[in-house]
Image 1 (cartoon, rainbow, N blue to C red):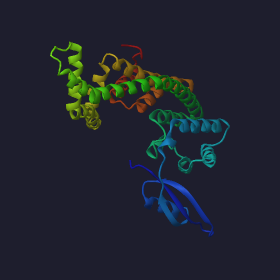
Image 2 (image 1 turned 90 degrees about the horizontal axis):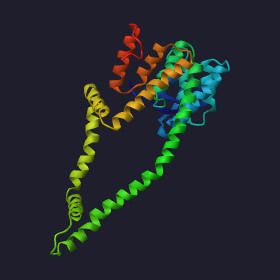
Image 3 (image 1 turned 90 degrees about the vertical axis):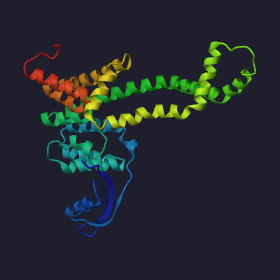
Length: 315
């Protein structure tokens, strides 16, 4: 699906009064057609820049929490979205909420948000879709907002704990590379004037400095080649499966990847169970939220076995 763009328009309504606003549409022609349906004569339509920083999970989590509060207060979804749009201080969020409000009634209006703008990750879309299908959108939104707030709090603590060690390691690496590339060649010239053989450790350090000074293009290419290879692998699903199996087999990184995926897999059923949604529906939401083909395949197999009558914990 084509990516939606943000457009600012200015025109005159049927009563001759000036009006303006913002729309999420794919092309300029769609903006003009929308204004024509609204009986607005366009005077100017221009494309606006989208600030990716405003798609931060902090904003999406707060929006979902506010929507859950309005729904629990008894407001219809369309009115709640319109009220949130009026209270938004950012134009792109305001235009997005207005588009959702205009698209109602109809199921799936919120879960199609990812096709409009990358404001919600797959976990949001899966939970919102489940809430719309089961009629428990307010509970799902509230559970999701609480879980995301706790996750952001933990992520912030981890980032603060790792900030200082990463800075120290980066500075130490820069100092070592600088000494190997600039300082060590000067000492190498002095060592060559000695008539005695150098110790093994000194010879190894000198060889490392010589390798860095002469083979830095090859070293740079070896660092960039995995990134280029990763872009090629992402285009083929069979290569993605092989890459994921290889990563899972690594001693330390594999355990971390498996733990992260299992945490995500069990988070969504915990949220859906708290909202009173069936376990199979929760597993389907998990499958929709996963981006890894290997784990999606395994979860689909597990869900099929459960439908056939097998236990979830059976090996």
